[in-house]
Length: 232
Image (tube, rainbow, N blue to C red):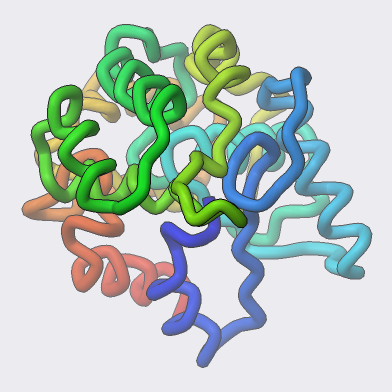
């Protein structure tokens, strides 16, 4: 969701017009039973149309990275440059990687929470990593009853793991592309380079040191420097 990019967006707004987007079923965006990458990419096309954006530099992380890839592969006329953070153009077993996170968020959704401390304590049973937990807790928002509820539509997302893990589809994107991988992450592997090059023949791959999958939060300085080298 867009809140995960607030600090980066504020910095890059000194160089560009920046739009941060809550994808459907995330953040403050609408909830929907329909959810796959073609739909998510079409949402971006619709957003760009409503904001009179003919073309943009597009950046996405993880699921957002697959949305960004799908946009480039299916609507290349909309993408000036593409940046993909710690995800490859392949299928992933999301249920295996994120089962603890899904279970933890479902548990939060099932309880009445009156403080973020209580939410953090509850989620700690499923997600021991403090940084990842705090990242996930950004999904909480206060209700009129002064309780905390999830903004993301976890009730739908738990049934869309196959769609979230699916590989992007489309025709090769010839535009300038940057893949950034976390040096301590296993989301982009050496054997993925050939598929990256087949879908994105003008792609380069750089590694962010001292960072795992949440690379833009774990090492924001190195992440920003890598973007500088690509954009400025």
